[in-house]
Amino acid sequence: MEGRNGMNTTNSGLLHPSIEKVVVMEGTHAASYAVKLARVQVIAAYPITPQTSVVEKLSEIVSDGELDAKFIKVESEHSAMACCIGSSISGARAFTATSSQGLALMHELLHWAAGSRLPIVMVNVNRAMAPPWSIYVDHNDSLSQRDTGWLQFYAESNQEVTDTVLQAYKIAETVSLPVMINLDAFVLSHTSEPVAIPKQELVDEFLPARKASFKVDTSDPRAFGALIGPEAYMEMRYKLYQAMEDARSVIREVDRDFANMFGRSYGGLVEEYMAEDAETVLITSATAVSTARIAVDELRSMGFPVGLMKIRTFRPFPVDEIRALAKHVRKIGVMDRNVSFGATGIIYQETKAVLYNAPDRPAVFGFIAGLGGRDITPETINEIFSYLMNHEEPVSEAVWVGLKTAGADRPEPPFPENSAAMKRSDGV
Amino acid sequence: MIEIRMHGRGGQGGVIAAKILASAIFKEGKYAQSFPSFGVERRGAPVLAFTRADDRPIRLRTAIYEPDHLIVLDATLIKSTNVFSGLKRGGTILVNSSNPVELFAFPADYPSASVDAAGIAVRHGLGTRSIPIVNTAILGAFAKFSGLVGIESIVEAIREGVPIKQDENAAAALEAYEVVEAAIDVSDRSRFSSEENGAITVK
Image (cartoon, rainbow over all chains, first blue to last red; front, side):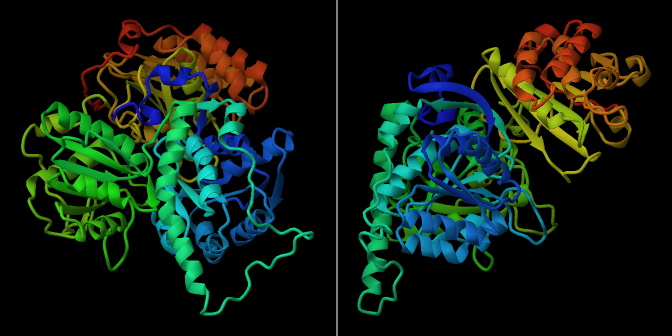
């Protein structure tokens, strides 16, 4: 499947006729320029590290007259989401961005946005929750918003950030649900790398202006957010549930349409890498996938049948994709950059849950790594694959990788063979 | 893949330099990536910035532990931090200092040079005498010393990448380029070849 991901395209991938120009830019700006291309009409946001430069750049773009949008400065993230809800309910295409504590402060209104079936798109720069204060990456902030009714995407490269923002509006406006696009703090948000910026006229064709089915309009009065009794609430919840189910096929379809027009595809809900004939597959998400590809290549070159599954969407969760994977692999490892206290890593829980009622149930192992910005290196991934190949059954529900605390449940090195060769030779 | 690690202090422009370097490398048809390692974001605090260059897309998303090239924007960091950590055998060292490089007594198998980037920056009105902004001057020196990237690409990337004083920054880079000598026997190796690892042990 090499070549499907935006980052895996060769130089020719940067020469596709849909491309206006290729610019070396930060992950945050990769989001800003996509918002401009999507012709967003209302932007409301409150600054928080490391999200700030997403909206800083957008404020420049709006003040320079390059984007005809209302830029609303607000006093909190709660107000930012309230502005997005208000503008979206009146038919506008709305955007905000936040991170960590800011996302937590929005929590009440995240439910409101999804319950109102508003196609708001938000960029969340994944930053660990405090205390202790951290500005570095992990995924507990967004995963804590699991049950709010938002679609959640996790990006691996700056190109995927740009492309996913464009796909997100199309998906959101098709299923009438809000979408959160997550990118790793600093490891992606502040990494500069080449990003292909598509031509505006092609984006306009891919993503026409929003047509809201219902909106606040004085000439066509309606009530929004009214009190609903037990006779109808549950049906409205069922419709929201169904919309999220429908999102699965919409995500795949939009990704295919995007590929036809722009030449880049991300596989829909997941992307598999070397998984077809693999015996042991690691499931993970976000930038760790990019680094894990290197470890998989190295292990493959030594003859180990390993592969990867990248979780691109956490909501909807890729149920069918994981069940299909389970049919042909012996072991699945899940590396979570998050932890649910009193349980395990969150993607690990969800992976096990979708397999319980499936006929094929390979052994599933849970690993926790990279919390609070702890670097996930090819060695981290090698350590996990080594553990997977040395164990037939899980002996722990949460193996912490790279932990400094003595006595913790963690993998024991070394790798069975070639342990010297497991060390990264030259970064590739 | 070639990895460059920059050691500076907050306010010297190291993070922007790493990004400009990535843009310059990309202009020459290579893939490039830059990534800052922010600690406490304040003036004077040690800051690391990383740049990678390769002839294929760069998938590695980690800090740089074993650089091919070191750029030191403030020589006092050599005493207070282990700037040499993981430097590959034969890796290059470029230091911003008005002192001759011999004074640093770097091991002979690590090509090294010093350049008075601070003095050059001050002459071109970049920052102040006490806090000169040395990032663009050091990039000009790096272009010549490493042979990794052309000065034309560096100057073009500087003009696009600095918010103000484009002419002054470009002139500082060009002056530093002129005064530094190219590292002998490094240019071939540094052009995207893979190289055997070896950790440096100097203090």
